[in-house]
Image 1 (cartoon, rainbow, N blue to C red):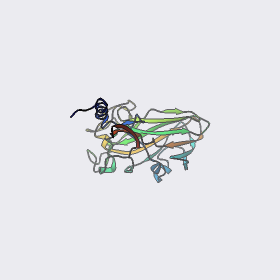
Image 2: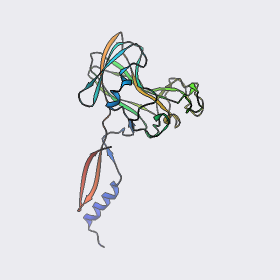
Image 3: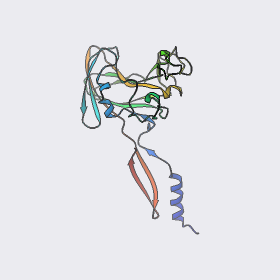
Image 4: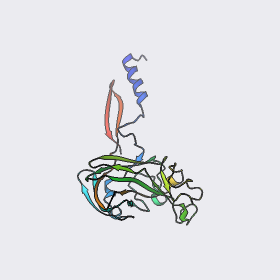
Length: 242
């Protein structure tokens, strides 16, 4: 069978692009917090810190968090153990905490106020109950955060916590097989702790006793470009993932 030069070129292109996914999001392997979870009851209360918060469903795929009483001590908001099943983690898994299929966590922040705020993402790892290794050991627990980021008035910023370069606290007493390291020194979260994520959230602080409103939105799902040959013509189709 003879193949024309045009057909051969199209078939070559198809073979080259078969199975290739182009994404408009360079961090497609990260998870985010869906709007539905940001509106859940756990994100409507303060986990620690001096501030109080009131949430409002914002236009589009976003939620406004209005904080009052912010100081230079951080205030945290989180989905505590067991984390919800909406992040795309591997299910079933004990405590719904198996995030080993991701390389990190990201979320969009917009400062709607007139003063700068400082924000970082956070997770906790290490189960401390009967399913933990070793079992019933509070030393398994580690707090991880991204670098603090100052978000100026009107600024929109995408924050990311990389599992390969996260800042730990309460890590010095970690028993094996949990991640070893030093408090405040960025390190990679090991494979065991990536399967035992016990909390997901963010923390915020500001100078002085102040109020601030931030608009938080999940990172949009990436678009996928699919290339295929139909009737000798290469066609490009763009679709949304999931």
